[in-house]
Length: 158
Image (cartoon, rainbow, N blue to C red):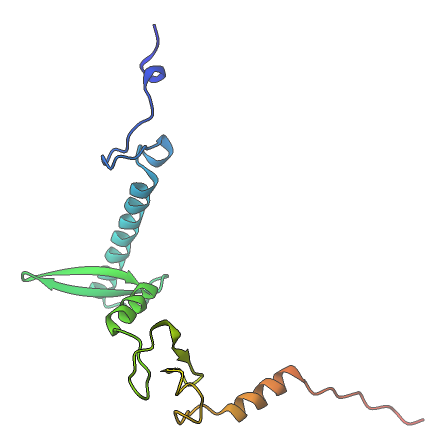
């Protein structure tokens, strides 16, 4: 008679998501396994940041993370979000891209200037939007870096 392991087919994920799991991922599909690992890492970061807050330690964690406090129903939750995600969230909340000068919506066709602002096709040139960026100093610096001073050693007179 055959053993039960030989008659079993592929295992479904233990979270009942509908995908197949494997023994390497603790009988979970790859997505559920990644989610579980991410939750464990966030819990560890939250625990260390809470310890730092309680102990008064001002040392930062190894990752660039920023704790975000959320108050809901008179309880405080601590959510730790990586720094990259917080900047992405701020960009999404910002709204549509607009020209800094005329406030016209530019969408994906906007032009980023060296001064750090976004402009439409009319105001993209530095003379059209009174750009504070010093192009001459930037050019001098780039020339100085690309052409180092070459000085020969002195020759002793005979």
